[in-house]
Image (cartoon, rainbow, N blue to C red; front, side, top):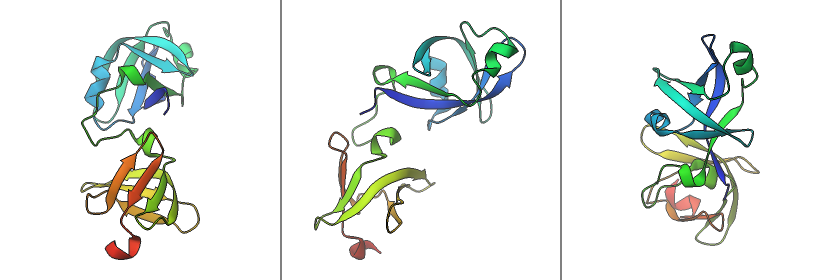
Length: 162
């Protein structure tokens, strides 16, 4: 599993004092209020303060003190160490741990690797893009087991739920 978890992408500057406008890549952007440190390109940075907007977050990072400094960080990703990440309830996983998992059905048929996880209002969907493209609803009636340590997900055979 990855040591760092991506929580946002810097999309712009904000103001002239080095603040960064961040697009959150987490399901609860209020988590940004608790951040004390982040990693940008693997370098630890201290978070000075955070302001939540409607769909973005504004962060002030120690050492980024001008609009020129802030511009250097555009399009970069903010990461947190796995130890500092939010604790997930039983049966919940970080998307980064799901991507790349091999999907097989209960009969042992290899279906491919998860390319992405699509969030929908009713449930998540695993997207397999290689070979025959497949969208798998993440439902207890379909997903039998998830083993992120061994990068394997077992589902019911496709023909039983289509």
